[in-house]
Amino acid sequence: MLQPLVLFDLDNTLVDRRGTLADWAAEFITEHGLEDEEQAYVLKMVAEFGPIRPPLT
Image (cartoon, rainbow, N blue to C red; front, side, top):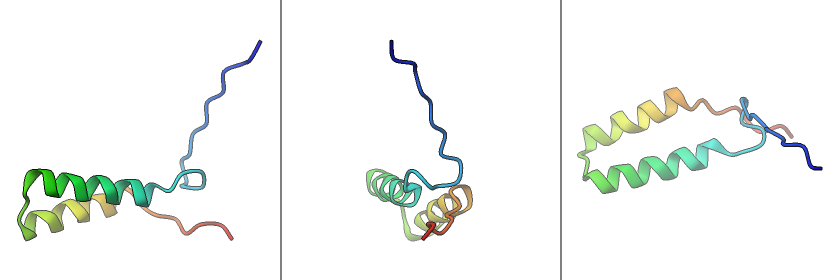
């Protein structure tokens, strides 16, 4: 019998959150027709709450 497995990617090594967050932000901005100032706010929040660690090489 297979055992369930859960993986937590807390340091951005398994999944590229930058691309996912950037895609979401672009879609959100377009969907809601945000102005320049509002766009800057959304992108700032994405940058603050989705810190990006450089990939391991």
